Image 1 (cartoon, one colour):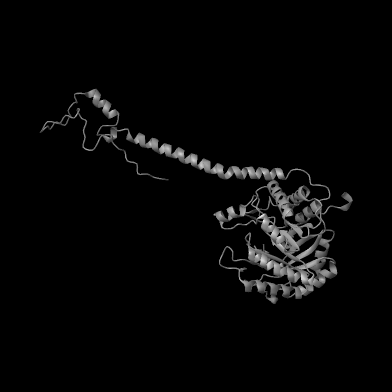
Image 2: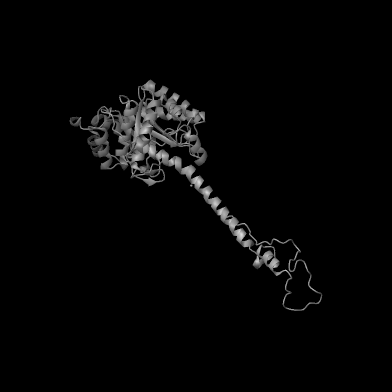
Length: 421
């Protein structure tokens, strides 16, 4: 999940058996007149009349004669082909039912999960965040943009800005040339938006599903990432937010990296934040999906909890869900919210991602993954699992793709007018 605003920076488918008409008679046999032979020298063009005409007629009719044109064997072959076709259709139907029936049942369950009313008070806890694109640190944004951002965020629950300051190099290093205006941004935000933290968003593609990318199994790479974290915090950022993808469930090298990073951020009194994959909708689903597609996508709930215990904030990327309908998407987000709340300790901020972008491709349909559906799903999951969780919020992805409707849906659904409560 890296911003595309930089121009492609990454973050993050007739057995044709040779049927021949056969004859029932054995090779070399003739049944012309009960086995009688033609007289030597016979030259008549008219074949002899068999003595047992009715019997001969019966033999031919039963497929035991010499004449292939008179044999009904092709009808028998047609019957076999027809049986094969029926058998093939039944197999296809069975496969379709095996694949589609669980899917339809699952989609129906998600739609049901979207029903009901959220509990009172399940609104912002003033711990929300937003991902901001690279333009904020490379010189494209100006003072007027800071003023506009301050107006946009006024009265919302946003307190953290994840500002794209990377990407990291595959070896874990971070060129300083990538964020020349970071100091200006941090000072301007502290002046215009007091109380809001500016975190450096660092990411890279991992070499988990292709030969290219960062390799966390290399100790020197992890050491370089730690060095880059120190570098970015020395630049004045109020924290650091990591998004490394595709990150497979159970990656112990990632956990080792987080331990080292958290020691560093804790020593400086700043937060360590990470973007997280979704949780298995059913147990071990990431293993099944990884076997079928080569891209596990989900994390186990256990691994999600292991990550959450090593950071100060964990923001689930609860979009790109492959859901085709707004109702099923909202039900899916409600389910993911519940799973994440169960796995996240109360000492860690849990944020659920909202889709502030509009794309139509496999895995994401803009008409289904709406901010309104996501907010309602978040509130339903929160209501059913831990309605009073204090360290909870939503994270908006991403500023440069957001529409007025996205902001309106966020405010109306998650940040209500105090006078209306």
